[in-house]
Length: 81
Figure 1 (cartoon, rainbow, N blue to C red):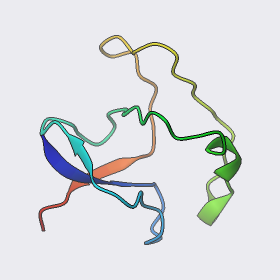
Figure 2 (cartoon, one colour; figure 1 turned 180 degrees about the vertical axis):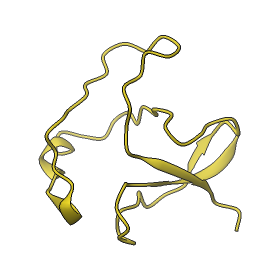
Figure 3 (tube, rainbow, N blue to C red; figure 1 turned 90 degrees about the horizontal axis):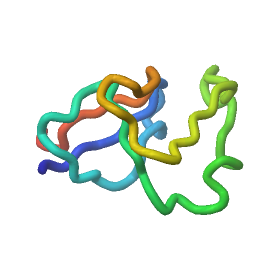
Figure 4 (cartoon, one colour; figure 1 turned 45 degrees about the vertical axis):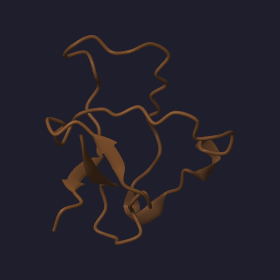
């Protein structure tokens, strides 16, 4: 596993999760990643930030089968610069 930055779909430098996420080297842009224990306020933190509207929600209650994940916006980059 290697450290990744998880960035949102916008061009704004604040559209990033603040800590490294340790993920398999094989993870790629478009892969869905479950981030557990995000708390009661995670849904209330959604905004119309930088022109992106929170009109679609995905609640994952069981793991996806191979190829079943919906398309998403998050992108990944390795922490090694």
